[in-house]
Amino acid sequence: MSVKAPNLIKVIDARLAHQMIEDHGRYLGGRSGRRANFAYTDLSNMALEGVDLSDAELTGARLNGAVLTGAKLNGAVLFGCDLRDADLRRASLIKADLRGACLRGANLAQADLSGCDLREGLIALQDLTSGFRILKHEKKAGELSYAVLSGATLQGAQMGGALAAAADFSDADMTGAVLSSARLNNAILDGADLSGAQLHQTDLSGASLRRAIMNGAELGGATVDDGALDDTLKAPAPIFYIDDQPLHEVVAAHEQWCVSSGAAGVAGRLREVDFRSMKRLAGRKLTALSAPHSIFFGMDLRRAQLQGADLTGADLRTADLREADLRGAKLVGAQLVRAKLAGANLGPLPIMEGRVARTDLSRASLRYADLSDCDLRRARLLEADMAGAILEGANLKDAELEA
Image (tube, helix red, strand yellow):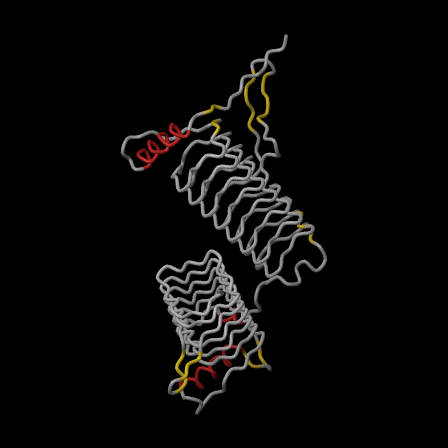
């Protein structure tokens, strides 16, 4: 007669789980307490919003369907954990051990997974009847298929060999991530920053890479559809020329035109120019600069004077525009994903007695941008995408928003 292997998954009620979490909080704060050990524990579908389980033991735990929005799981051991369909929006999983975890269908939008380990892994358990056996999920371990990671931070994440078919990585920060031999077929990587990422032998067939940043990405042996990289942002040229004149000289001439009120220098008319070779424009006087559809990705523009500038369709993703003067600027359709705009002035620009030019951000993408303490009075924000934007302290008085 065969003997059925015992079920290693422990079932506990929500009250005991929260008591263990409270004890863990005291442990983290150095006030006695006890480190939480939820190894092989059934926590499925539990409401665990905002809990702090940093450095906790969760090997093999069932968290499928659990609500963990805003939770802290930094350094937690989630080896072989079942996180299918879990809500992990804005959760912090810095350096968490997620080897072999199943994240199929999980929502990790805006989560921080910097330095975490998402490689495949298996748990071998000792069985009295058959020696060692493998703990299996209903779906493949180490899987991210259909997971949502839009706006997530995956800097330096270890994802070698991971299965992430049809996962959504749009606007994710994947700089320096190790994705060698990962299966990202049909994944959405639109706007993702893959700078310095290792993509050796990675399957990117059917993947969407529109506006993805590929600066320094290593793609040796990767499977990529024809034309998939055409709309990606690659490394800038060391020097950008405009009619045989170096860009930095053209910008200097425009600045002279600003300072002299038009008496000297030349106003810049710079359509589709890549400014990245200049690295920084912090504090520069660039009033009324015309640079539609130009690239300023990741540049330092702190306190830059860009009043009345035409930046229609410009790529300003991750740019540092803190305390910049953008009054009356035209930013229609501009890409400002993850841009730092704290303290920036996007209010109205007086142009003559009783008349002002409003800052126009219609159809601009401000996803995950920092707009804290920003002046947005009377700004046009029609059809602007502000999902995940930080608006704490922002002044939106009389701003033109969707009804």
